[in-house]
Amino acid sequence: MGTGYFLVRGDKTTCGGKIIGGADDHTIMGIPQARDMDRVTCGRYPGMFIIVGGVPETDIHGRLMAGTLDSQSSCPCKARFIASMMDDTYETDDGGSEAEQHAQSAKRI
Image (tube, rainbow, N blue to C red; front, side, top):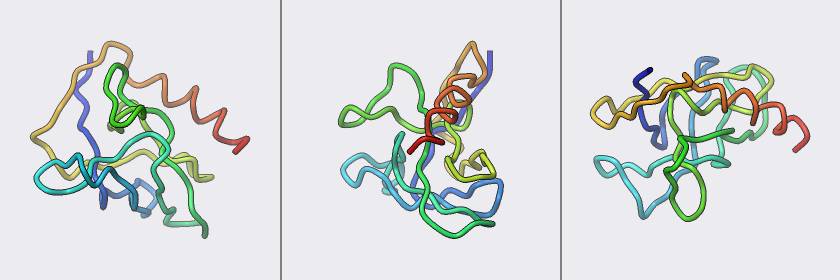
């Protein structure tokens, strides 16, 4: 079992990018909460990418909430995310294997 952190707009990627999308009407400490399919930049490659995967059984407007264990970037780096909000956590049994599965399908986007 692992502890994950929910992600928000402005959180960084492990390759130097950042989350630029989020739900303006769902916030954590006033910052829009990130979801599956929200936009993200890459620190190494130009262009716009998306968050792939989300925390099971959590959604905002029909899209899964992004979390450190269950989400990654669709950029070529397959970057993970570095949470800035450490108070909002979730527990998981699988350690985030769903993000890997979604990353494979995101290559086709």
